[in-house]
Length: 64
Image 1 (tube, rainbow, N blue to C red):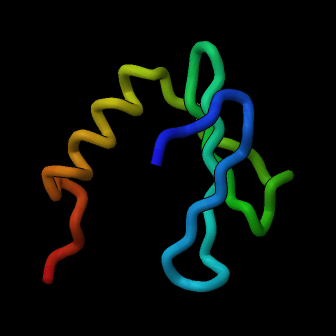
Image 2: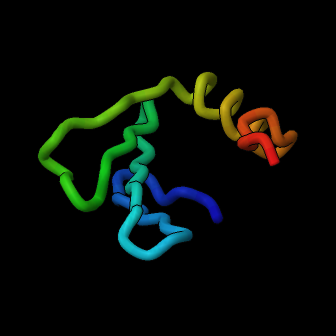
Image 3: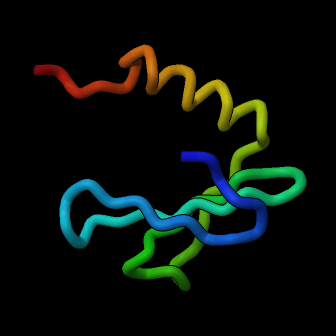
């Protein structure tokens, strides 16, 4: 799935545990969709690319 610029995209794999991600011109912003006013995390495009590449390689997988 590709992010659409300036639109919150919701992602969930387990019911009510959802995150929302938004792409801007300079960063990627992440928030808890159940508590959107609680604050956000922001990442540069380079940081986000590095993170998503690590995800694809399994770097962040929990121990089995």
